[in-house]
Length: 259
Ligand code: PEP
Image 1 (cartoon, rainbow, N blue to C red):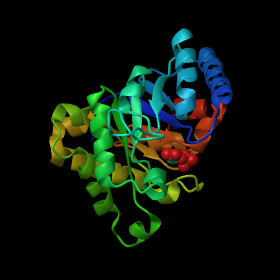
Image 2 (cartoon, helix red, strand yellow):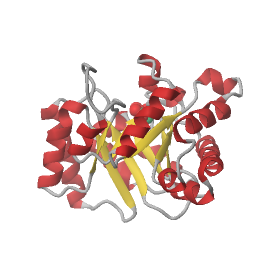
Image 3 (cartoon, rainbow, N blue to C red):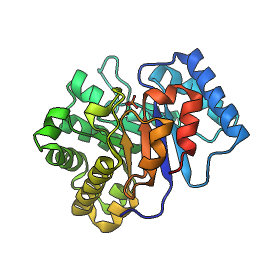
């Protein structure tokens, strides 16, 4: 079971919102939270595409908006001949707080392995940011009874050998691949069971204190209707939201949701 800690709701904008659209979306979010503030104990991060981060950063910092800045990926190297890549250092300079590592879309379409994801986590931590480590199984793996092993392997692949202090500061997002962008949400029980499994893996790797301090999100077709019950599950400490995060009203409703 988790400590009492801040819930983190993160909006993954994926490859949506050019910088004009990103500014509009963040202003819509700002207008909504101005009318009714984000509830105590909740943190919100927004993860625009790289080309929109600077624009969103300027809006957030100029208007003191209650959103933390996030990125969707980074390269593990500091700098050099990696055409088209963006380093963790570049993101840290933009005051990015959270970086998604190992999203299943990148694992599937760009061939990112657990080794690649571990290196990204190294780079994110080295620059004082927090990783949101994405893990999750395919439908075939779930049906074959292989989901728990896959998820434990992904968690230990990225986080083994790290101190309790480091592990206590990370975010792990359980995102069953069959639920991402499909309209299928895992049942609250399934989400709770896998988030509890992830916490037990964190405990095995870095001790019970670290496991209790780390935050575990659920992600996969979350909507304002499903969010409250998911957040009420004892091992769900937040939500990673894709599609619904592009609609300011829906995203803010998710941020505010209660069981
Ligand atoms: C995601 O992109 O991490 C995600 C969970 O997407 P969606 O909410 O659209 O399923």
